[in-house]
Image (cartoon, rainbow over all chains, first blue to last red; front, side, top):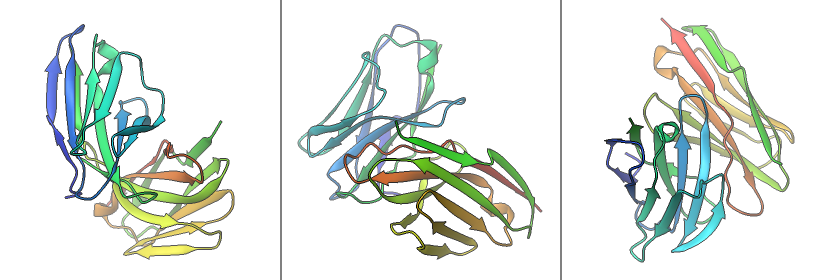
Length: 111
Length: 110
């Protein structure tokens, strides 16, 4: 158990819908990262937050947004969903400059 | 642009057959490298951090080494439970955008 909690574990929804994925980092970790992993691609970095502020941005679509709250949990919002958004979404947390600890992921299926 | 390449993409080994995985990279401001293991449908699990060329780290049957341009993960006398995808990620000096390689899928058959 990495200490990083992601909910929901599985989510099935329809095209055009909006979903929110939630992540609780390890106790004491200020950084939260979001990654997308689809079948034909590796781990793709989406975005990173540090203590509530956006720190780095990857290839995150405009339809996706994220935020980190004062209690350090983070949410990834995915809107206007398309079939190609079906993937595993991972959250990870870290101490400053340290290794990342990943959650078990949220599997999103868009039908 | 940063590039991370892992080879081979897939590796089938017999139990006890040692082998090596490669991670090569072109990254500005390299500060070190992470190795992770990922089981199907699970989140990546941290294995090693390497910071200096020539550094080596070991854990059970795994040994990671680092040079200036690449890193190797050696699997000695693997067991079926070593079957997983192994991922590397160079650590940059500036910024925190951690880019992972595509991974090497290792299957160890009994």
